[in-house]
Each structure stands twice: as structure tokens, then as C-alpha cells.
Length: 248
Ligand code: ADE
Image (tube, rainbow, N blue to C red):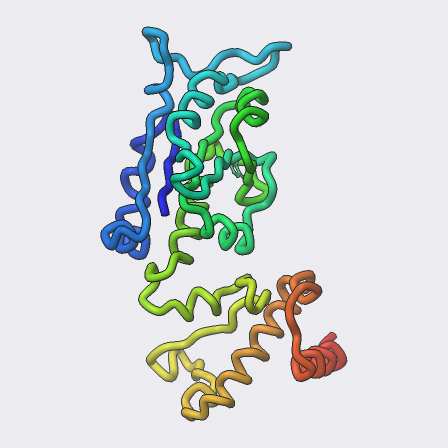
């Protein structure tokens, strides 16, 4: 899989992909991440990428020509695999685990980092397949959002994590739809707080049951709306009914 990131701040990306899982995935050629300076698709002497908005108002708008040229030169031809062009913007569809899983199925993701007051709407109409927002919060640009998208997708690629099971068990994964359970490591007691006994007992069925129930408790308390879409067993439903009946 490959990412092509188009930005006016290419140096922004010199750090985030040089650590941990992403670094290892790059070294193992599981993913290629190329960062491109939007200015290289300008044709004027000053490499201008933005201009004032028609109709007036504050801020600057990214011009259409450089972005459209960038996509047209970077997007793989259809025989090169499945490609998708994504614009990061607070106006986009909310990026979630399901979306990360979907993007992980493409051969190429071209990520356009939004900036300033926005991007000329004709870019969206001409070359953008999806507009994504990483949350209901306004960042100063799409670069951080692009990092979030790359990170969330790369860790899902086969071979990226040492152990492929842990991606499946993550919070929000399509397979559970629940928040993750709490985790503990040594020491068994820290500042007077002991690790739950069940985790020390070595009974794997009991441990799995406890973890599932903890996931249910957390999801119900923190993100109850997720339970509507989660796949729940009869045991889960019984447990939740009891929980609701015994908790104020
Ligand atoms: N650019 C600015 N804010 C953003 C957000 N929340 N998501 C994606 N891109 C953005």
C-alpha cells in the first residue's frame, strides 16, 4: 500500500512516521509514504498556492490548479490498483475505525491536507473522493489529521503489528464495536491498588469473560451509543440488563 501526502508543509512530516509501528511498516515495505510539496505543482515564479476568497471574508483559500495537478500526477492509473483521494477538512465525514478499515483496503491513498479558510470547492468536485474530519474540532491545518489517518490505517495492514490479533481486539474494531477493557502489568500491587484477582489466576476462560464484561461496563458508561451497533451475545445482554438494574 502507498500513501501520497500533498501539503504546503512537507517538513511537518519529517518526524511522525519515523517511530514505532509506522517506521517498522515502512522498513518492511508494507507501506510507502511519500510526502509532496504542493508548491511543486505551481507554474508561477512565486509558487503561489493560495488566494483571497471570492465574495470577501477573512483568510485565504487554496487554489484549484496546484491541487488538481497534484492529484492528476500522483493518482495511480486504474491498472496500478485501487486508489482513493482524501481531503482532510473539519467539514468532512467523521473518521472512525470503520473508515480506517475501509481505507486499508486500497492500494493507494492520496491525502490532500486542507489549509487556511479552505480549499477551492472545484477541487472537491473534480478530484476528491472523500472528505474526512478526525473529530468535531478545528485544527490549524489538515497535516495533523493526515498523520492520524496514516497511523490508524498503517497499523491495520497485515504484518504491521507484531501480533495481528491485537488490532482485531482494539477499541471500536468492527469485530467487537466495544471499548477495550482495562489492562494491567507488574507490579501486582501499586500504591495500595491490587490487580484484579481474576487476571492472576491463569484461568483463560474466566479472564476472557472478565475482559468482555469490563468492555461492556466501559462502553455502557462512556459511550452507550456504541452498544446499539455492537454484536452482543445473550450473555452480554443479560450482563448489561443486570448492570443497568444495579447501577444508578
Ligand atoms: N483540518 C482542520 N481541522 C480538521 C479536522 N478536525 N479534521 C480534519 N482536517 C482538519
